[in-house]
Length: 192
Image (tube, rainbow, N blue to C red; front, top):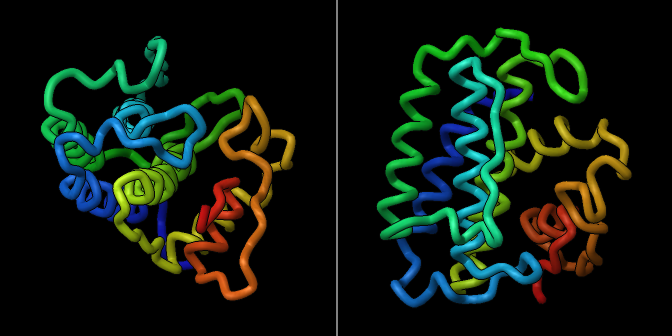
């Protein structure tokens, strides 16, 4: 595997930003594939995930903000909020000690290892917002390969269900593209 978590995270900032830039002003209220969430809620959740990544890159233990809905965490213009978050993330990535070991609920892990999930999130949630506003988003093959390499070793009970990151794997159409198969693997209906 050639992709690194830092490379996936960095390119994911661009991929997600490209989708955010296409959201019309009234598009933030559109329903997303994430049950009960609007596009704005996906942005709020993803911004929190990237703040998690920034904390990791800075060698700090991340914290999660409290909000009734993730969209409540977005103040002001959503695009400007995202751009500021992405700029902070890029700044934190420069010179980060990716080999630093940190304590986690799953035991000691490197900063690079912990950065993998926020990097994958950028692509999955770019797809979510794209679906909400009717924009097709393709996930690059190297990101799909990276996600499987990183996530497949975890047991399903840790990843799926109410406390996991993904829902049950969705059905894959016979003629599914690699992106559609990946999205179904994350628990989303790729064509629904």
